[in-house]
Image 1 (cartoon, rainbow, N blue to C red):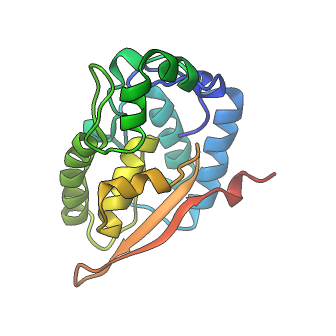
Image 2: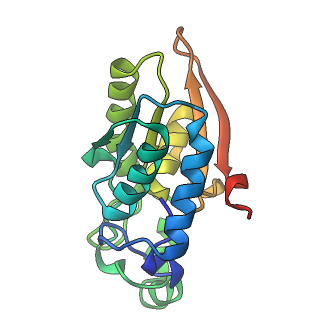
Length: 194
């Protein structure tokens, strides 16, 4: 999704339903233009408005339907919702350090990367069986994106700490007829330059 009001302030949003900034709407239009040539059959999106608005921009550009899928929602950040990294680090130094290195660690009252991965894996299986042979766009958040990518790469979820996912970036992979997965892009942002 594009830049949000809280993202522009470096605040953690999680499940808080914050809106896109004007820059975020421009980013959504830019990524829609990038995706247009891929002729997707469907745009699956998180229910949060930042993703739904980005998905609608993509769908309008490519002429594909938008389908909301709850499994694409952002992670639960619990007590950290609305805070900046420095504020979290000051109040929960050990927990924050663990969360930034251990996929099983979670914010107080929140969800771990491992739990997010368990949520998105069935979505990937369902999308593959429902849309086999077609391009599918998933509009989601950084944490689910990282878990989708670590699943596609068939690597430990801890690899997510070495993957950057910017707003309105494009990551992609192809699933061959024999089930082989080929990741062809991670955090592509060339469409945002300009």
